[in-house]
Image 1 (cartoon, rainbow, N blue to C red):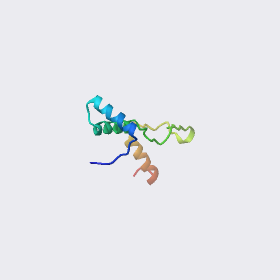
Image 2 (cartoon, rainbow, N blue to C red):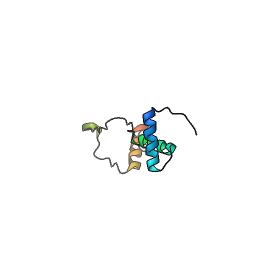
Image 3 (cartoon, one colour):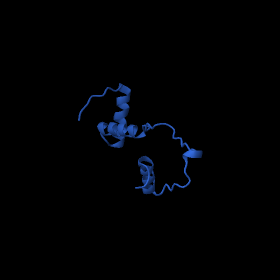
Image 4 (cartoon, rainbow, N blue to C red):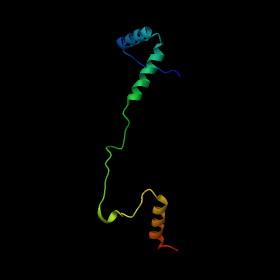
Length: 84
């Protein structure tokens, strides 16, 4: 795909000289430079991660968090009134 990019004369001359020194085309060097720039771009995250913990009645010591099926059963029993 072709596009037009405006460079200042000194920047264009430096880029052409660097491309010749590397033995690549100006297009290849510009593509490589853009790829490198985009790869260094910081990833936007949701901000600093904070782990919030709770104490007291919200935590049930009898829960085994490794047994997710038991957790689902407990949720169902709480929502639908106990075992059938």
